[in-house]
Amino acid sequence: MAENAKSIRQPKKAGKRAGRERSLRAPVVLLVASGEIWLTLAETCSLTRWTERHVRRTAGDESWATRASELRGRNGKQQREYALSSLPSRLIWRWFNLLQKRRNRSEAAD
Image (cartoon, one colour):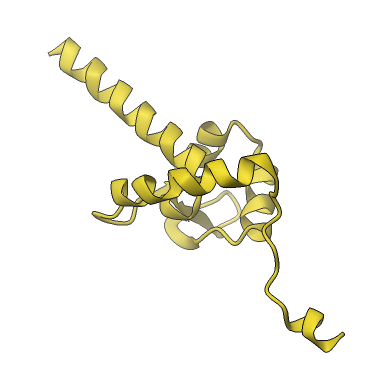
């Protein structure tokens, strides 16, 4: 019984999807290895297509890396920023694809 209490917590996602996300993780880490990229709550919400509350709750549940930003909210509290490398790999890929689209648009405009 004591062994179960000290055992490592299993990931929440198990089954068919678990293997696929693990295979995407290695190349994704290389994409953001050059430096840590921090996203604001609004950027994270647009990336995940979730509400602010859901992003905050999921970040706490899944232990996403966060830090206090220099921006302040309406009540004077510091806003949180979320590390891109701590997000699930599918969201990192989505961010990377959006970045590529923006670059292509800016190059076409020039």
